[in-house]
Length: 442
Ligand code: GLC
Image (cartoon, rainbow, N blue to C red):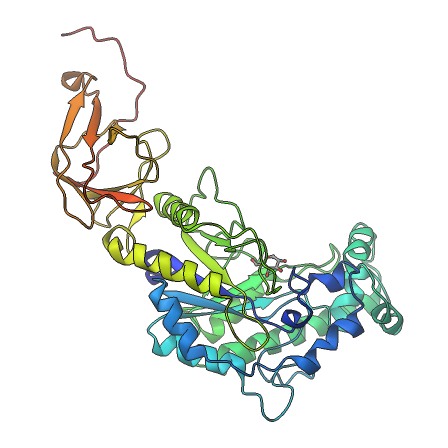
């Protein structure tokens, strides 16, 4: 169920951590399904995954410093490897008596840093024979051969998708068994660690004849913890949408969250490249703010638990920008639709202050907003407090058509990345939505 904390939070940190950090192949556990490695070979990474320098307290401190208000850990990716000691008989880290419960460490640290706790949980599970048999259309006794060689589960799934298997009682039984297992694991992560604020589902591969009972899954989660938010990767039953790696051009109508990497991959590869610059990350973040969304920014630690230094640096730079502009971040709501301003805007919860994010400032320092009906109380640069002169030009206010508010942003006090203007209004935001008209009375 959607909660206000989520819509106020704006920034979360995603953590993609798993045994895939050993082979560093990128794409998390997808190499199994892409026939880049056989399942059995992939699983050998279990033996070398040490988590030896795992220090969730320092992660949580970093996330807090980044300005995040929540964090989401991959408790189980598509490989089916649980980062907690699952009792369901499938592979899990800890893999020996010396490894702690990684999920517990994360939850405790994140919670004690005052952040909300999110757990990622993949529906798709390449380890579950029952799941794999249903999506690939193979019998369970055919799976050992499939697992011994690189096999494209993905292709098998695509080929199998349109086959009529409605009368196949073996597959039906497999599917029921998988769904029971799926619930039992959800129950573990939702009950072992106190109250979980957010359950982040992923990738619902199934078969048309064996659908996921999505409404029942939602009710099951809420039966355990009513206040848990669920993302949209549960058919039509999630609380918010999750555009991935792409900032929507037009925002979803309701709550949403952009999940995005700092570079070109979710998981640790040791050779991450194409890092976004601080300017790009901050600009993207302000686009999310302007369209009323959150950003869930990813880190991908190595097998020992170190977050790559470039990611640490980006998080800190973002955090410093947020700290300078906290008022224009937390608790804001989506601002003016496209076309009103030369930049994205958000509005305070009481609707009386507009924040204009300026990623692009021309040399003269002028920017404008059209269609604003309110009187302006004051315009200033957030952070420095420098006053911004403004004037209104054009329109026909006596006919209800406001002109353009032109604002000059002084040189001093501009931000290194994105300057934010605080525009205090005489009342709640009031905008003109028409197309202008003939000025027949002057
Ligand atoms: C995609 C990928 C998955 C990744 C997720 C993060 O669904 O399949 O590997 O964890 O995106 O949003």
